[in-house]
Length: 211
Image (cartoon, rainbow, N blue to C red; front, side, top):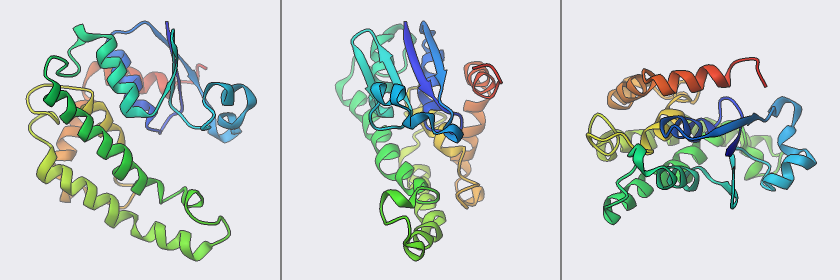
């Protein structure tokens, strides 16, 4: 049994969707950021980074979304969530997911988590970071639109672990000040992923009152 620690409106959604896509035997634990549960002693024993997601497996705890998505794809190969038989194609999957993690998500985080990079009382620096978010996040998605989105799905004709990850970050576009008209293919991808039964189920589960 796998256990996913998650919080709504975070990147944990991507792994949650992948687990559902894979029909994995898993359970979830919701971490309430409003109550700073991510900093509780019990959760810090699971993930000392004090962030979500965290995936508890029989062999230990995994963190970082690209690693967790790759694990789900490899743990449940019958689900066909990655081209596991093609080393180069699988590396391309990792390239895309790493870009989302290291560049797009970081640019997004500048909007509300500037204290990670500058002193919390440096209001001018934080405001400058926030001001640039529409530009930096928009540039990341424009590159995806122009160069990286290969077809109806990220990798082309085949749905992979890249798709729930892109879908998750694309949920934040409007709040980041990015004009959706600039990236119509990304927006169409977001719509189609959102129509999948597994995605609808996961979103309903995450926003239910059940803990």
